[in-house]
Amino acid sequence: MHLDDLPASVCSGEGSVDLNTVREVSRAISAAHLFIYLAPESAEEAAALGVTDPGPAYLAFRSAAMGAVPWQVTLAAFYNFSPRAVRAMAGVWDAAPPERWQAARFLAAERAMRRVGVRIPADELAEARSLIDPVVEGADYAGKVLAAANASVALPSDPLVALWQQIAVAREWRGDAHLVVLADNGLGPCDCLVLHTATGVLPTALVRTTRQWDDEEWSAATARLVARGWLDSDATLTDAGSAARERIEVETDKHCAALWTPIGNEGARRFASLIAPIADAFAAAGTSQGVGSA
Image (cartoon, rainbow, N blue to C red; front, top):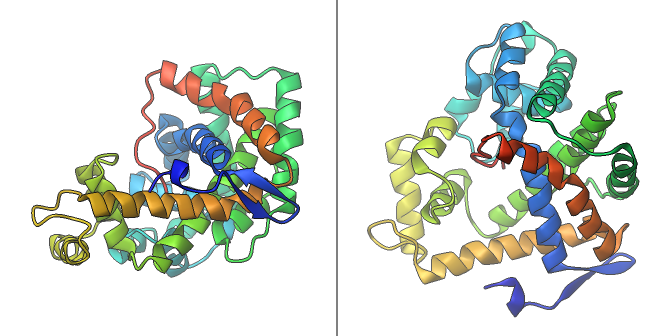
């Protein structure tokens, strides 16, 4: 199923938002956000807090907005990580409290964007904020745990980093919505990764390393997808599996239409163009966007 096969827009709240616009702005937001997980500045700031293992550092940075929650809460919010992967973060709040992790994340973002030369003129920064702020303020956070946590974080004084944090809220909002769709489609934490890697978009070895599902768990998830007809017996993606994957993305887009109604199609597209210099600068610097965080 593709966007062209669906109605041009989805009604939500006071208006309607074109699904192609939702996909466009979602991709722009993801591209502008994801550098934080790969930039060397993140590893350096984590090391300064006493954590050098990249797994626990990633988990601490991303879940810091929720406060000093036990690792089980992070596991629930992140969905596609194995318990053994997330259990490794136990002790990160002893190394430093969540507010220091959040401050370090902002510092890493600022340093990384400065290093690659992100340039957004002051008037365009202000325009971008005038578009994303009502989106963040008007969002429905019911069931959106990571988005709500990020929306509660006080914005930093640096204007570019403050914009980036608002981008993070929107990115996590879509991620939270996506998890609802995955569950509704009967795709468990390991199953959704097996299906995603079968598309060729994500490298299996990297996903297996970071999410830490063992061979038995990965094989069981593969068998479930084969039984559904979404994978062939050799674990390659079938047409039905490809259609299912696209349907899940479209259903996520439908959920996210409500998020963008405060600024509509024109505002969402304009916002996507205003934040493009962030991803462009990292691409020009040779920084891969790597594995998505949801």
